[in-house]
Structure formats: C-alpha cells, structure tokens
Image 1 (cartoon, rainbow, N blue to C red):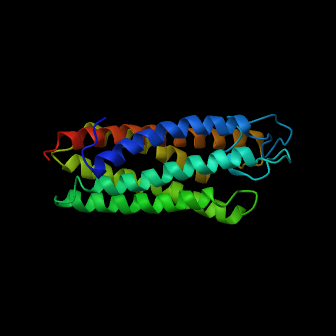
Image 2 (cartoon, one colour; image 1 turned 120 degrees about the horizontal axis):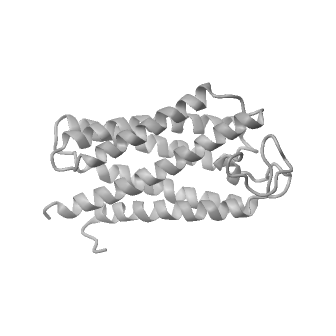
Length: 230
C-alpha cells in the first residue's frame, strides 16, 4: 500500500488495528485462567458466558492469576482504541469544508474521542479491582457509540464525494447497537446463568460488529482518500 499522506496512514492503521484486535482477543481468550460470574469452576474462557472485560481481570473468577490474559488484553485494546480515536479525527477532514456534513463530521469525531476515552478507562480499571469505575466507563462508552454512528452516517450521506454505501453500512450497524442497548438496559440480571449468557453473547455481537464496521469504514476512507486529488 502506497501511503499518500498522514490520513492515508491512519486509515491503513485502522484496518490493521481491527485485524490485530480479532487475533489478539482470541489469544487472550486462550490464556484466560477460567471461571465465570455464575460458575467459578468453568474451565478456560466460555465464549458465551464470559464478558470481554473478564480478559482484563488481574485474577480470574477461578481464583487464579490472570496476568497473561490481562497484558495481552490491555496492549491489544490500547492500540486498537488509540487507532480508532485518531481514525475519527482523520475522518473529519472529508467533511471539513462542507455545510451540515461539516458539523455532523465534527460531532462524530468528538463523539469518537469521547467513546475512546471511556473504552480506555474501562481497559485500565480492571473489573475485579475497580468495579464501579469499570462499570461507569463501560456504560458511558457503549451508550455513546450510537452518537458516532448517527453523526457520521448523516455526514457521509450529505457528502457527494463520499460513497453512500458506507452510510448504509453504518445504518445496519446502528440497528445492532440499538438491540444491544435494549438488552443492556432491560435484559435479565447477570446473577442467573441464562441472563449472563444473553448479556455476554450480545456484548460479543456488539464488539465483533463494531470491529467489522471500523475495518470496513477504514477501508472506505482509504479508498476515498486515494480518489481525492493531491
């Protein structure tokens, strides 16, 4: 890939960070020390009953040290979230000379930075050490994702130079975010095995959809940047 300018580099970085997130998340799952909220004796990582944040615990629910998984999780998500925040800043430049799309792009970038700060806050406040802070950062960031999608979907739709298909991809992703938020705020309690399974599964759906969306949006931004005159 020939790099045209700093934004071009950022868009490529976003794609690589998205791929890295998938790989290192599964590596971190492999090293998780076991246990869930409702079943401390559960061996290893239960994909449908462990939260993603469980990978960042210092001590797993099994009572065993979880430092290997913790370090992989922390490094992985730090790189990913910082790449995402820079990506949203670079993305704004497509709309910086427009009208309404300029303000939508600006609000989208600000929302992206806000969500990134929340996600980093959740990463660096392990659930087993700082449960209140971790929960606050998690709820703030997950609830604000919808703002990013709405603002950038509108900005892309109004901008004649940006392909509308990326707006439609945002809209599909927005439906997933809305369904996740419904489950998050109205779904069953984590104290039951069924409730935990539903909540943890929907968290996986959101995180995987978020990563795929950013991978696709990073590719779209890179292609659009390539088409712009120097």
